[in-house]
Image: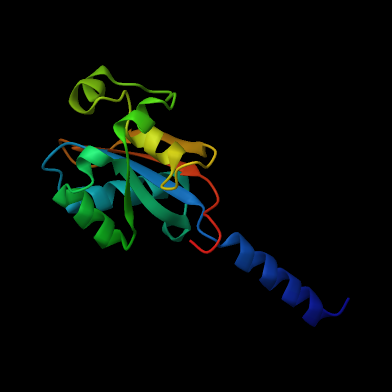
Length: 155
């Protein structure tokens, strides 16, 4: 095999591995700041050694999808923000359930369940890479979790 052919094969493999396959689930309290959401997502990805460019979506609970801080945080990150219904999130077993979250939004977990479910209904659960992690700041108002999954072709 020539060097040019090996280079082409390597470039093809590298390009395929760069397809975004991470979903970030975000749970947030009302009044969360967009900068906190952005900084929290970036910090969690950096600590886990995951590339920001590998993220294809943020997902949260329907009750928070219009929260200005989440909308603004997604915009700062340049990512789409999707919502999943409380009932969908509640049906996902999560490793770190919270009674406080259940009382606030009706599901024992938002960040982990949202990351596992991803933005597209009907797909298998993703693989949790980063468990629920408190956001940055002295009084964090969000949590972040990361799961790996393959995006829908053409999406």
